[in-house]
Amino acid sequence: MATATETHALLEVAHLSVSVLSNGGIRELIHDVSFSVRANEVLVFLGESGSGKTILARSLTKLFPTAPAVRIDGSVIFEGQDLLTLEERGLSAIRRHRIRYVFQEPMQSLNPVAKIGQQMRLASDHPSKDDRILHDALRLVGLAGGGEVLNRYPHELSIGMAQRVCIAMAVLSSPALLIADEPTSAVDASLRRRILDLLISIQRSRPMSLAVITHDLDVARCYGDRIIVVYGGKIIESAGWKAFFERPLHPYSRLLVAAQPPGRNPVVSLDPMPAPAIADVPRQGCAFQPRCPSAQDNCKEIEPALEQLGGEREVRCLYWK
Image (cartoon, rainbow, N blue to C red; front, side):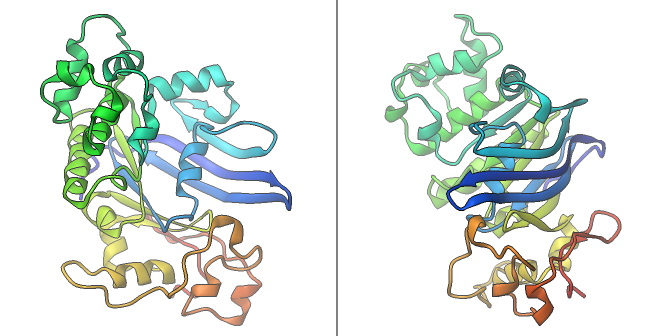
């Protein structure tokens, strides 16, 4: 578990909702989400694939087409300005310098026809012919022989090397917030811990917050300062690391923690069916109700509010007690 050293908010998200226009009408993918990211903390967004974590992360800087088919409501206050009110030019500057992303597929993040050095120079605040800064960044992520790496094309790198290059590019501009979206899903198990340890080491070495998006409970257990659980495009629980793992409150969180106790084999299962995509969650009542072992009849009709419990704790359930 990482240790946050400051408590003031770097980013404040209030009542964020994301909707898309489809053949079936308007569909809400993210519903009334509010949270903060504190300075120098590691915040983990935990949830199954399809829960809306990636859409939530991308919506912070409108990192998807802003055509009429996508609508974003709410506010995202970062360094004194609401990012959702900025035009693309301003958002592009924020993405380039202050909020950087590391995605799960490094080969999709890199230009296949440009050498690594060319791409890193474009990502750098100092795009000169002096590559010492690039060499330093590559050494930071554990890639020795920077000159050789800079002269390679992405297809000449292993997946692990490519992901390290993406991390190096992301931290070149010394961002205030790094968002890592399933950063280890494309690498084998032997590399996962090393890449996550690398991200935490970089975060601790500079004034930077880290938001990690994952479906892996062990990632949350080992690296998070705070945990936000996302299900069906909604926050259903948030808590500090210790409180969450000592006493998860939402039925979904309880099942997650019970399924993966440390050092043992899973003891329970959610159910044999896959988690629903955001577009398929119930439009009425509790999103988790079809899979919930504690569901009552009124859970089909009443959508629970996100209850504030004091301190860092929130939970969205009628029967969490």
